[in-house]
Image 1: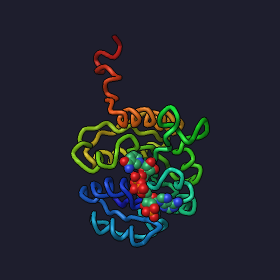
Image 2 (image 1 turned 135 degrees about the vertical axis):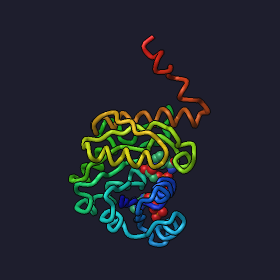
Image 3 (image 1 turned 180 degrees about the horizontal axis):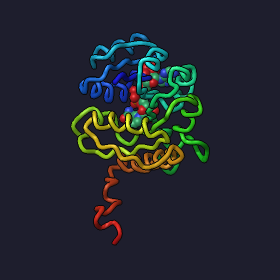
Length: 209
Ligand SMILES: NC(=O)c1ccc[n+]([C@@H]2O[C@H](COP(=O)([O-])OP(=O)(O)OC[C@H]3O[C@@H](n4cnc5c(N)ncnc54)[C@H](OP(=O)(O)O)[C@@H]3O)[C@@H](O)[C@H]2O)c1
């Protein structure tokens, strides 16, 4: 598959490296040509601009900070039309009571991305775990919740989840992405506090008492 990655940071490097290893043709797009080149060289991809990465991909990962995603994706909207656009952003910041959503009661970051690129098929994915997890064997067998409205885009996202060693877990349409983003605020907050989020939940066979 041809994959475009918008951003040349931690998530771009972690996921991009796994996708290159899985045989995909990856173009890294960034505002700094030098940073795109350095990352592309490190993982065996090619470097380009945001527009080139967006145009290249059959699937495109938005891996810029959540505050920048709409401004990066907007100008590339035409090139993204009809494609799976994966959103891994965490719109969360430290707050007085713990990590909090920057989206407040408004649209999710995934919805904002979809609004910035109206023809693209946005899928929320990969936001729950750290780049270091996606980069290595810790990703093996992890369930990766996905939210999206387009069945083909969900299939593409599922393939890319499998290619990092994980298991796709569709959990609803894009209108549910805000719940996944809020889940990240709680779960990541627990990890930061040294707690284990898995202790919140019983095994599936015991879940109904
Ligand atoms: N890191 C994690 O463990 C992790 C885990 C889950 C989800 N996420 C999410 O993944 C996304 C990327 O995180 P990351 O850790 O990979 O970030 P990062 O290492 O800081 O990289 C961010 C990338 O976005 C670019 N960027 C930032 N602001 C920009 C702007 N206004 N215009 C154009 N480009 C801009 C940066 O370019 P410059 O280098 O030029 O600044 C860089 O290429 C975020 O939304 C984050 O919430 C991260």
